[in-house]
Amino acid sequence: MIIRIMGEGQYELSDDELEALNVLDAEVESAVLAGDADAFGSSFAQLLDRVRSHGAAVADDVLVDSDLVLPPGDADLDEVADMLGDSGLIPG
Amino acid sequence: MSIMKRLGLIFRSKANTALDRAEDPRQTLDYSYQRQLELLQKVRRGVADVATSRKRVELQLNQLQQQGDKLQGQAQKALAASREDLAREALTRRAALQTQAEDLQTQHAQLQGEEEKLTLASQRLQAKVESFRTRKETIKATYTAAEAQTKIGEAFSGVSEEMSDVGLAVQRAEDKTASMQARAGAIDELMASGALDDASASPNSDIDRELAALSAGSEVDSQLAAMKQQLGSGERQALGEATPGDAASAEQAAAEQPDEQTREG
Image (cartoon, rainbow over all chains, first blue to last red; front, side, top):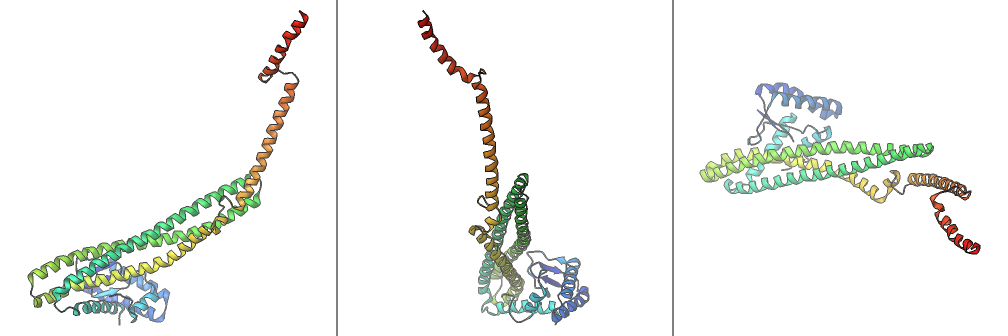
């Protein structure tokens, strides 16, 4: 599967990784919902690290859709909450 | 819903919306390519803008450094003149500048980070746009409208996702840079208005004036001492010690002698 980290690029990961990623993703999500910046910071960093360390970077000239997309590494809790809202932060 | 899936869906729906607008998909290939080139230009302008801001901060850092060095020098001069109060004032102002310089250093690092990220984003987008152009030509040359539909969909989605991502990256960089530019502008204004000059000892600052007065005072003292010394040696000459300065009066004395000889002869 292909995962994009926004502002950074795409990574190709084995489908077996999905389960571990889902656990971390759920932690990030509950931190966002709870507005817990500390919990968000640590679980989001772990999620990104896992994608980077277990994935292979997709070459720049490859045109491929991502199955999953992650917010930029320097995004804070508020920004991620905004992205998930319907405020249309991601430009077309 | 999972964050990763939710964001993925947002991106995909944007790509689909772009594609749905197409009547004959082949006609939209060129239009899409134009938009990609425009975005590429925008990213490059973004890189240039961030670089400009970074250079501006570098200039300000240099100015603060120079002013800090100057205050350090003034503190040393003041201390040598036994004016600890002045030295303390100069060092206090230097510490204030130091705080400002540290803030600028943080901004500089952030701007450098943004510049690197945007440069990489621009390289990625350029590679994808180039791939898209190749596919676009193949599709236009090879496929009928019906066949083209799926091929275009594949090409579109990959590049459209990159465009959304890069578009947001530029927007975020602009937002971050804008707030730093506002602060850099404030520092420039302070420097222009002379408010920082006073605090950083420009040639007209009070510390400089006091030091100038101190050194003027000691210069007067040393000039007086030199004059006294000259006066001292002048008195010794008057007491008959032979020096080259007496040549004129010796000649005068010699010129007077023939008269005496005439009178004698």
